[in-house]
Image (cartoon, rainbow, N blue to C red; front, top):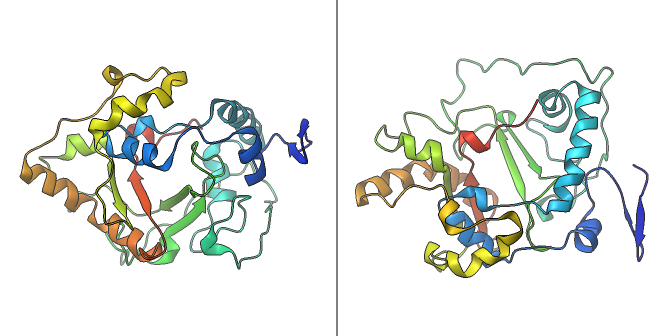
Length: 264
């Protein structure tokens, strides 16, 4: 993409941003403690992308849909690399520092939809720590939330169900459908309490977020809370396995279906 401006020695482009662009043009709006509090609040909608970066994303998305026919085609035919490391991101992970970057990967006809191959009958019933790699694509978020520069925003895509009736009791199904799931690894301290939200919400003032606008479930009974923890236990095990706790601190979350959709 042709650069639009120069700030020092960093060019401002129009596609997915480089790490340098994020530092110069889209500095983090939130601290790590604030982000953990937002995740732990029960409303994952508090996680935001820089508004200027969102505008850049919107323009890129329109061009991407023109080229690939839809965002679904872009993801399935280009961006997601099932069972392979992410070599396309401009924001590489420290876990993949030894990997060569491809930078780009083209299809002969990017607008032709290529559906996923069928899930074999012997595939696992749902996503877990031992899910075979051919059912997973782990990539960096090319358009990350407004996170500090030392924080990585990684996406885990899977062809297997995450919300599965064997894992999610009917008594908490509606709650999980609304709130999603989340957890924390790599730390011996408790995550920031949602009671701190009034202190941290001013960081979200430009998005017009106030405490009365939060959409979240009330704290459940001890039994319900245990069931929610169990529902996320397989994801938590996967995260602990990939991001070794002696080296990484994570805040992981699974968006509820209402926040997992995108315009095709």
